[in-house]
Length: 211
Image: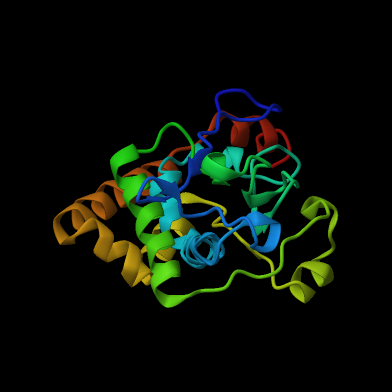
């Protein structure tokens, strides 16, 4: 997010699986023409959304985009048409059936991010993880009580929270392997510590005259 007060740059990822030349997410007689595999894939991605965020949104600046009131998602939910949740299912069906994951940004390493997304979705299919009910209303307009009632959680709000979430998610950690995981966490810890130790111009402008 290079500019203040406007939406940041996203890298929405549209995903579908094919088996024997056919889209495995499409089922003509299924709910909204989606297959069980599609729902379980959504369930897996949602379950591991926090754990993969350090990979899909790897910079300190990434979390200036993931704030309420802009187009980027903040809440772990899904919908058919609503653009405020993490996952949206576009209207296209048959070979075009897909899910859209909306929180990744273009600063990510696509090899790591896509590996984590695929691993999470396939885990959902393997374990038959059912997603919660889709959310049709604008989540940004919900109160905290409504969010809790619907079991809607938030994505990590900064890089430190994202790193901590990654370290708690064994599936996503295993998708990276020990060598990549160790070096990635080391690099992100250095980045977060450098950011935390740096006095930003905003702090000077905001506080110097007051204190």
